Image (tube, rainbow, N blue to C red; front, side, top):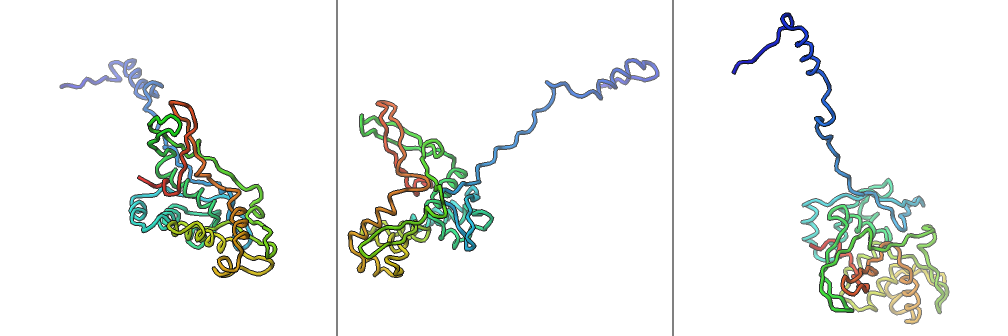
Length: 274
């Protein structure tokens, strides 16, 4: 196939027109589509309670990251729910405030903040939605339902993080000073789910009650054998009366048949189930 050429000497007008067309910018309709950057996942987390470091500084934000295949394998190999959730936190939380999220720091965080971090790790890894097969308790209609971890999950934050984490409760032995459960206590409770409620209360009280009547609480004997049952009950009620962070047990969705609310309580393990 021959290629025609235009001589600038023989036809200067045509040559000039072709040169002009070659150098002209493409029309709007001819422009290639501009690349669109993917929207980054929401990795910055607002902590409902906040972490107070050894200098007394309060940190109300943390940074999480998406889990990868190696992380998934580590979760699958976990020997218990407690180990699985700790593994998710260690692998998924990058920073708390400006501090690296090392295991000792994660253990000392309040359980409510750890719950918020686990929800955030789930969201950036698998998305906001969790699917359920549901039978309505009101009309027995069977259907699939979706829980959106942003839209459907209620959450409560502390107004005064420096003081709201502490409780003072009157007991028969004097005033008890308590602090909300931290990661160490949460892990021990999750690792003891086969025990009786009374045994779980002992773990909770040992982890949360710091002193009674000015005397420090340091051993399991202090809350098991030296604490009256009525005092134990009052302390457990005070510690569980107000729930901070994501309220996993309060999720509901309306039935598409009868429109009644159906309880869909979540557990921490549900966040990472297949």
